[in-house]
Image (cartoon, rainbow, N blue to C red):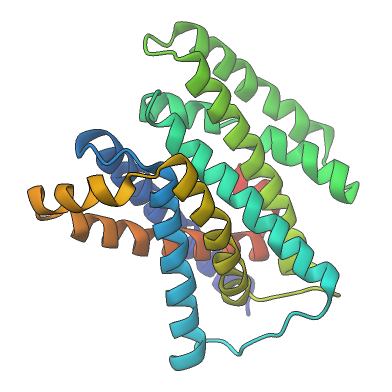
Length: 260
């Protein structure tokens, strides 16, 4: 692939990732705040169920990419770790939306490159140019200033948001290893296929324990708001597009480039 075609391909992936992310974020906020659907863990489980189903359809029936087998126990453990960290990052982000405005949530999320650079060094000993690290300082400083001046600041929401941001950075570095390492390389759709069911298994008991009345509340809400099920379906499909494009951007660039 020529450099121009490669640049166009990566630009298209980034646009798809941006668009899907914005759609998921806004629909998450709309469902969690406006509809009275206050179940972020169940919402994340819906997202991962859609990722598992759509990945399987794409590989098994549409034959978009060949099915790859897991090669080793080490590779499986990394995929399982990726699933758990992913669940923590997404659930934390969704929980923080209950306490923080979307704009402030995204401002805190802007520190993800800082955590990504840190974890990339700790896990792979990969050093970036000092200019790269210096460029991250204003971002972190800006978030500190914004936190002090945020009228809707909520301490618990802020702590959860920062934790989710760190988890997202760790996930990005780990997925970069799984997508690019010669010994454990998987294509993006296969990684999503293996990761999603594990994530659902992690989220199911968490939903039953932390959100035991989800069906009791959701079913009447679905009858009261006719378009809620459609929004939930569109939200889940967008989550699949966001996760798949996230993996593709990581594979064709790098973990730190993705977050920047």
